[in-house]
Image (tube, helix red, strand yellow):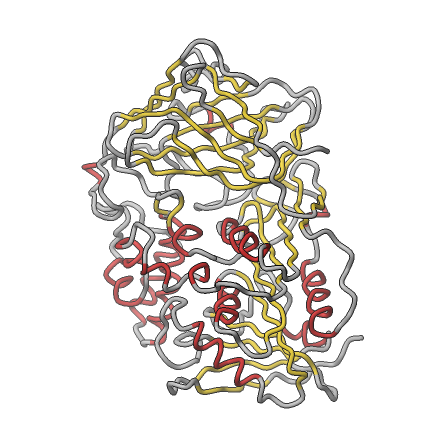
Length: 542
């Protein structure tokens, strides 16, 4: 049953410390009571996550009172915005206020993605009254590891772009039109060519109006990050949650970190991961079309979740875990997160894997002879990022041209005689050293098609600051099938700019080294029986 929707109302509440929080309320134009759907967000409540979700009027038409609230210091709400730090207390206060709204059932669900997903978790951490279920899509569960730094490497492009966006609204609220204009200009052409690349000319304004400079000052986990991360505050929680992620989403590790945390709670959980980037969620992801099944109507999936927990409707009979299989272009069901025993594919080479695309191979066992492939990284022309989950473009792209560069070592498996199905966590263990005290190792797993296109499946990076052997690169999880006639490929380099800041090779923290101090460095990648470098794959039955 659907309803006519009443004209939206703007309503306000006051927090215990006297700050006004504004919200838009959408509800059916019919007698209630109705359960409540709440979204708390920092981008101006008129947006209401419509970059991925249906307009709140659609949810109201399905029989819900929908409340879209500007968090403290954003939109038209009062107070000062502090990244995630007031969402526990303000989330609890918001639920106390919602309990006073007329014509509601007392049951509340929360929805929204990205920042709006994290506000759900922080409200849950507060023990919010009336909260019955959540639908956290693509959250930063651990802000340090899911969003700012990856494997210890600074996510330059994403951190700067989002830092500019968040600072711009603070400048707008302060009436600083010149600063706002500077942020718009920076967002439309990120300034990545400063003397210190992580400190662009707009940094002084970023320090005044945003958080970006503080992210540079805290390159290691610690109290600064814990104060804003749901991973440090949620604790035990028995709320049902619908988890939604994307294979090329920049926050996939947050989705999976939360899922694994909640899987131990005993409360009903469902996980759905599509082939998507952070936004939008459609069938075309980068250069690859994953078919109509990838354009799954997630609003209807979410509505069914809320109808069950807030209205008592039957829950669709679906597996606890549904993963979109790239290449098969279908959804696969699992009773739990797949954790197959890793299958190792070993690197072998004649020492020319960086200059001859056919020289590096992947095999079922390490070669008898030890080989060394040397990869030279030149900061003047850093190895570019292209596709994946972070950087100027994200998604699935043909990376054949990047693999042909001589600052990338490639290792390609034999032509597959039967389909290879992957589902779960991926990692690489590489015996590698460098002629510098600090270096990055960037790894990409790809599907080499018979037509020569090289489709990236997953990737990972690690900053190496102490001698270790092998170096483990925690790559992002995936679900994919490589069909007969296709081949696996592992590509290794010392960076991926501008997705990640160039490692200057000095060991100094990001944002402290000028470009003229960045070192040319050489990676020495060993393979063979004495140095069994390998990629670890989650092979599952068809």
